[in-house]
Image (cartoon, rainbow, N blue to C red; front, side, top):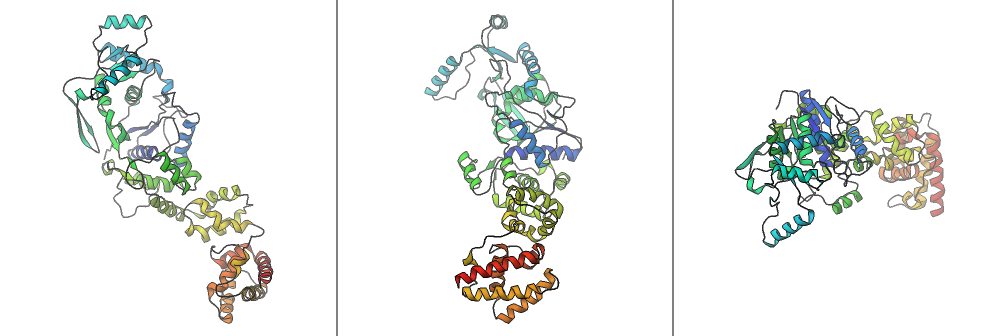
Length: 495
């Protein structure tokens, strides 16, 4: 584990919704920065304007803040080594590309897209791997300069070493070696003058003094290219970590759009914004994501963000693919809900109730929370358990008022006797209610499930609810008696 303060970055492209894998990458960067007293930088990699999605950058920032992952430097914060949006750094990339050309490490390529397509087709017909054939690699510098000055369209390609091999170190995977003859002269600057990722990210990481690079294993294929670009400039390499990939719940392959759409039907998603809207908590999402690829090494697996910072160790990261397990998300989310302070949980639940059009009384909500907290998996689970508290009247299915093995008339008698008993109680607290009600059960010669089941439906409109007597105390004597009278009327019509 590194002791020195690190500089790490989360560098997403604003091309869509923030994915669970991106959230985990951001989290690991954040944990290492906070663990070492270093800096965590947000950099927006938006040079691919064809894939740019309006609003995606703000969604990324909002997602980080919802998760509680605060960055030290970034587009809306500034910092000493900005700008932090790549479209604001055009001249920087141009200057570095020119430096590579001037030193012979890159070259101008004038091949048209049509010619490159013909070359690819020919290579495919010969059943060899498609690659750039080096047509412009050995152009004389003065000829290339003349063609550029005449306005001929071109790109800048990296001059990959053609002999030997490239070996680089990945902290999680060890040494990675690739024969240079298998590597291509990749484009660094497109014909419109904008850099591709391979150049821009390496330049930015160097200039922003990034010490550790966490990124997905999908970048392993271009890892040798990135290493060669850094070495062509003579720069020190960061410590590389290519993280485990997320697999679909079956463990076979990555999540597809179709499987993501199916997951959301079941109340799950792999996108941060969806998870927020589905009632998951940032604590639960972070805990779940963190342990898919990191062995915290403790029996206790329910961790707050502060505890993650304390325990984080990059040497415990695991490069093996991790299958997405939504049951574990439910587990972590429920555990974090149960550990929340009552006022905190009430504040988080209230928006779901008000969105449902309920007039929420804050004092009542604080009393309800201890009754429902153990039953919640997501925040929006509050609706079936708590919505009825805030309604003046509840809709009752008359059939559900009939107790098991009893008639409508016998069930009506249960409600009448309960009404008479409750009406005369001097206090209406759950402690005062419970003893005489249990005595009534014995007097009627029925089971608690029969008697209290009828009352539960009559008072809450539901067959499942929070503890009955505590719920009766919260809504008060007047509402309880009104609902019992209504139940009597409904049962009498069925008798």
